[in-house]
Image (cartoon, rainbow, N blue to C red; front, side, top):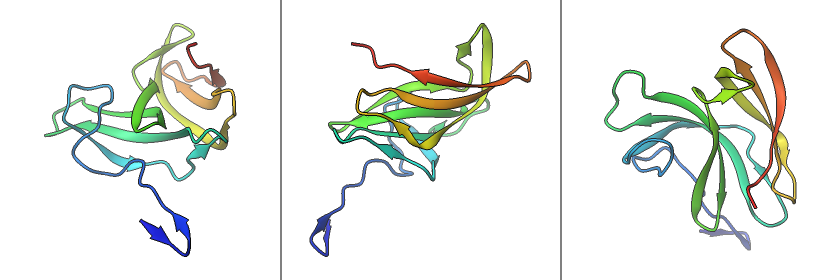
Length: 122
């Protein structure tokens, strides 16, 4: 889509296909209000993800990157950080740098919360 000389590209939406942490098909049920983008065009965002059709226990919050037409799951609720299960997570508006590192916060099941940095796998 083009508007006023600017190209707009849809990266993600709430639609019934998403190649993330579940066997497909699954859906993004909501998307973060603060996606981050670096100069290489990689985008980092959080989303609520649910298996489609829905079933109990299949709703997670996850942090993704989107680049070159594909998604990569970085971390999601239920994953383990510091030997404790992640119960909630989010990212910041300027969370992604040009090296591909992502700053995010995580609430852990033991009640603690911390800031983390995810580094890309070379």
